[in-house]
Image (tube, rainbow, N blue to C red; front, side, top):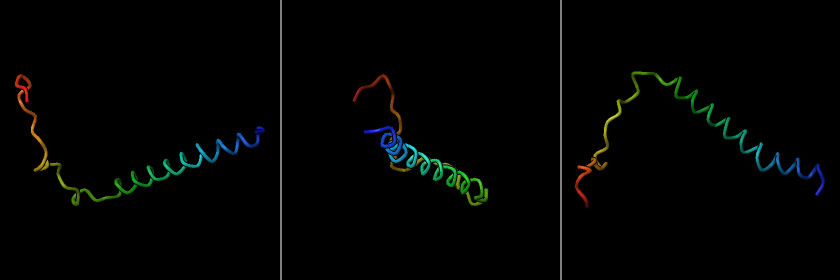
Length: 59
């Protein structure tokens, strides 16, 4: 393979997915920033979440 093929391989395998990931991340952050504060829900523990037990007990 020549230099051109290696450069194209790098662009296809690394640069394009990286550009897509950056674009999606920026879009998601923009959506979160534009979301109005009154519509945000307060964080609360899930009902099905396990509560941490006493670390001195086993099992």
